[in-house]
Length: 140
Image 1: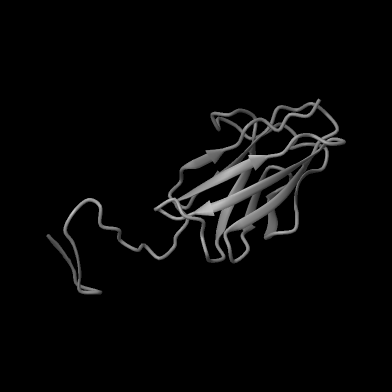
Image 2: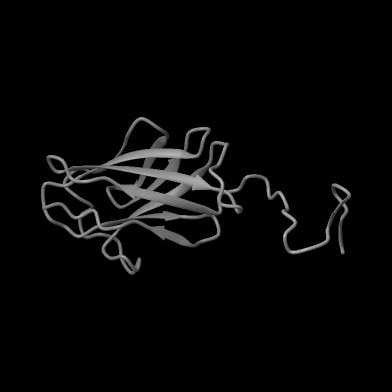
């Protein structure tokens, strides 16, 4: 049995859950179908237990050239990534790297616009350094 001195709680088995403060530990990414060169993208940030976050949080978002995350996209789309109705987005490197802030429910809505056919993938870079990478966003 491990004593948790800050809260006087005990972990007695591997099924006990330790609250790590709602930190971002995972994300789900949904890329919508193309409609007139635009795709809707929804990101849901999650905690270590796989639950949707219930707090505002920040993550980095990258537009990648492949599903492995080996390189940033060449151009990042004709217009690229824009914020939708949920969250805030600050470009760090135009059309390729962003700081995103979720709404209080851990949700970020984006749009991807590309009049070309560049192969691109969206990555949420989690605070632990791992990347969650979307399906292809390549437009026809």
